[in-house]
Length: 57
Image (cartoon, rainbow, N blue to C red):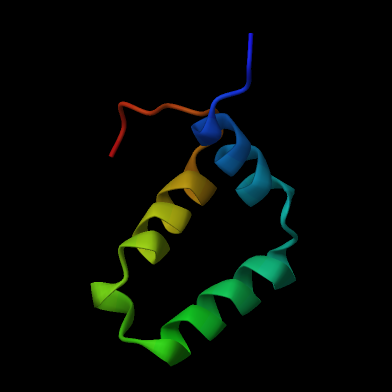
């Protein structure tokens, strides 16, 4: 069974170190206002989850 893209994204976010996560967030918010960036919100939600749960939002 192939790995879904959401599984790959979850594993990628979980594999980042604390410094890499901080740098990603910092760099992304420098480009544009953090309130308008949907991928920052998605990144934070995935980072807070212990196990992948696509139904949680």
